[in-house]
Amino acid sequence: MYRKVECGLAVALLAAIVILVGVASVARVAGSPIIWSIEIAQLLFLWLCMLAADLAMQQGRHFGLTLLLDKLSPGRRHLLICFNMLLLAVLLGFLLLQAWKNTMLMHSRLDGALQIPGSYYHAAMIVGLALMLRTTLVQFYDHLRGRGLASDGKDLI
Image (cartoon, rainbow, N blue to C red; front, side, top):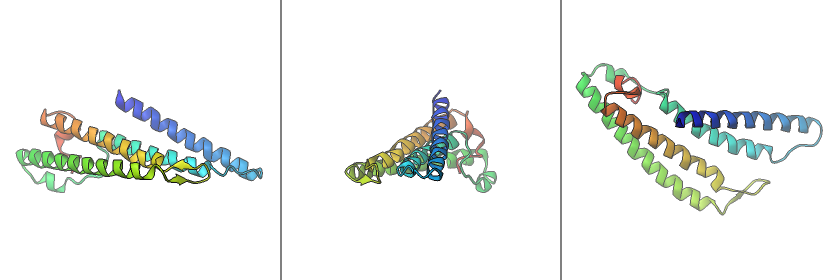
């Protein structure tokens, strides 16, 4: 269910970006540029990138190397995948904490013509990292139970 919601939101963000850029292009040609269109398009694109990164993780489509895994026995492969996922979870947790601190610092900074608080941009990192942490923990749990994307060892490393 969460994947469908995330996919729907990603499609909506992409559509909004395309429509906004199209309208801004036509307005510029007509001699009446929309000066805030770039700011909003950048904000929406940042949120789209973070959603897309989590969706790619959910589908095991993030960059991965299996050279080492292919040479390991199934038991050692399982241990290496577990270690990698735990390390990734710790890293994502650390990055999430830093993103939270940065977002709080940036709230008072106003960006661009619309004077949007900087925290609106940085909040995308919090949401994206939290989603990726959730995905990693779910995949770790599924791997321990012997099911899911991680069971064959071809994603995750």
